[in-house]
Length: 374
Image (cartoon, rainbow, N blue to C red):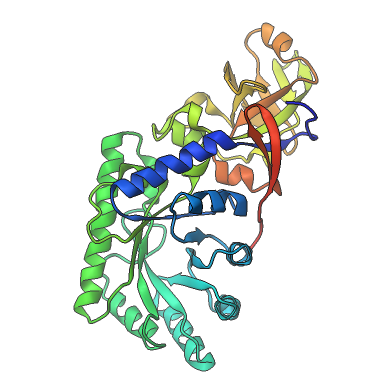
């Protein structure tokens, strides 16, 4: 790689990205279910367009700023998959009135009433999904919760389609590290959705969308009867956490941070980098399955191959620390050398950067923008 920008910077391997996009789309096609990618990881129109070109239908976002950015880029079918708040309804309505097919989400009567009241007041129908809890216990209603039909009724009072369907996320699949364990959660996820559908259908409401997904369960793809779409996001890049759980191989990881060796502290037995907690994040989610992962795996700049035994073992705001157990590491990583670091959690790491430097066949070929913020 020639003419590198100042470090740290975000490097995206286009060939690995495209292979990952192909893998997930083929998995969805094989089960005859729609794939709605979650752009919370990539946050890039260039990446979204590549997913759509492969057959993805609509997108998922995690902020309204993302929804606005992708709509301005030509993508209209959007689910905003974070619980709605009343103060954001004007903004959501404005986006729909510009032409977006935006779906919002809630899991409680208070916000459902606020959505219905806002819709009635403005002559507007907010298409709204009800969030389900399929075992993650982060948010959502259990599939037999008596509030489900009440919320559906409130939403549908805006007009037909106000109740748009149900959505769940098996985030607890990240706690599994065996194919059998992930497949079990995948089946529980779709079963949860079917039970909720039965409850609201029996109350007279028809859910148009039945949406499930996480990267591990989407690739496991258990029994999907009744499911209309799957959502996943980090599969586009993968990361060390997913690798440590057996969801992907190290060769699948498309994203890395390029950093420069800025010092040798031989007394402390470490090499210093210019990529610290802000450049890498302080996520340690891989620890339970890969104790040596630290804050990221150190790789050769040109080949991308891991430098055996080396990881970022500590971080301060702008410094990364690589513990050295072999004096020869100071030789292979001299001051001024550049390396790649494979991130633990791609979503968190990428959030620090405004764009991707795109790598193809060993050369930097493009700069793809990202959208950050809310």
